[in-house]
Amino acid sequence: MSRQVIHWTKAAQRLADLDDLASAAAWRSLESYLGLSIRQHLTRVVAQLVSEGDTLQAALAAAVSPADLLMVRRQLLNFRNRYTRVETTLVFFADAINTRTNPKISGYLKACDILAYRSMALLLDQLGKRTPSALSYFDKGIGASVLRANLRLWDGTGVNPVAAIKSTRHNLRRNTALIHEAGHQAAAVVGWNEELASMLATGLSGAPAGVPQEWAGWASEIGADAFAFVHTGYASVAALHDVLAAEDALVLRHTPGDPHPISYIRVLLGVEMCRQFYGDGPWDDLAQAWTQLYSLQRAEGATRNLLQVSLPLLPRIVQISLREPMRAFAGRPLAALINPERVKPEALLAMEQELGQALYTSMHWIWTEALRLLALTGLRIATTPEKKVDTFAEPEEWLLRLGGALQAA
Image (cartoon, rainbow, N blue to C red; front, side, top):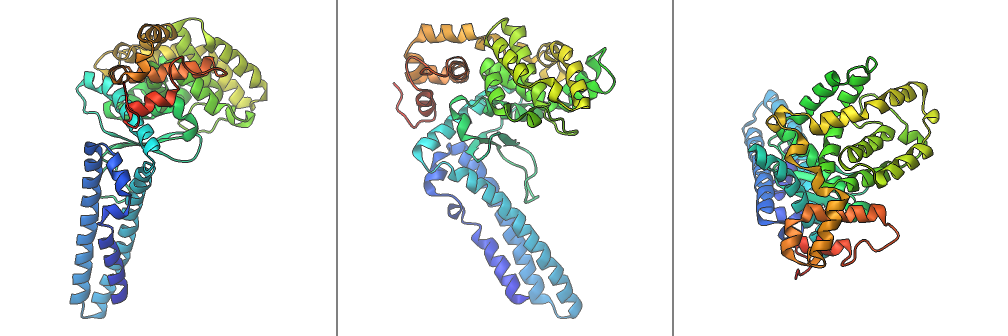
């Protein structure tokens, strides 16, 4: 037992060197406030684990009877489990930070940090709420995700100091999913999910029994989609479409308890957002192609019925999500706090026409219009995929300028 105690307590002590977890270049790639916040949290977590190891060693040294040794044995097993949980926390952040070792990738991810933070701050500043820092990182897969700030981490001793947002490489040039995930964080800060769920459950009058409850169960994802829409407009809808456009069985699948709406209706909900705020546009062609490609007749009976009765509800769901006053928003609707008209296609193209090359090369305009640049880039990709995305620069250039990896004019 003595050997095991020494092994695990020494292992805990080695965790204290955070520079062994991520490269110096990766740590330097973080903004100073972000790196400091993460290091302080991890240092505190490891220090507590080491202190528990000291207690374990003292208990072993004081043990004189079989009963004492049995108690130490239980403490040792608990310490091993605590070590594993602390290591899981450290490895998560190490893996996230180590995606920044390449200067170009570091620039991309810094830009994502800024975009996510700015999207949240645009809402939360108006409500007098503190905006958490964002740590973006790359990981495999098709979809993005967020480990929200203030959630308890694996180590069980503290809460996450940042909003850690997983991005995917395939979507980098139009990373509206980043804003969707930031929307999850912002909604948690103001308590929007619960209120939106309640309003969906009670506000879909005339819907068949059980249908409003289905939509209420999807509130968190509807809210995040709405958040991405008000910031990036049609770009968010087109990018969501491209991620969800999979096999029929996936698009038409209904999984009870899944917080994500059925993919078929989720895309059409995004189209309805565009129609209500922008009128006719390319989203109409997208919806037509979507419904032709994925016939409701191929859905299972109960799912088909749910989708059919949900189609007429989409205008009301958009009304509730974007136009209804909410306590979470101090009695105002989301669209009044973040106006989707700012990312209307005509407004974005007018901005590009007015500012010209400076929009993509001037740090002033890149910083000022970062979120609308994301919306414009996504619009260009969605509507002219066969052409160069813009007249002046490839989209990654302004992202790299925003992230400090490319010199701005």
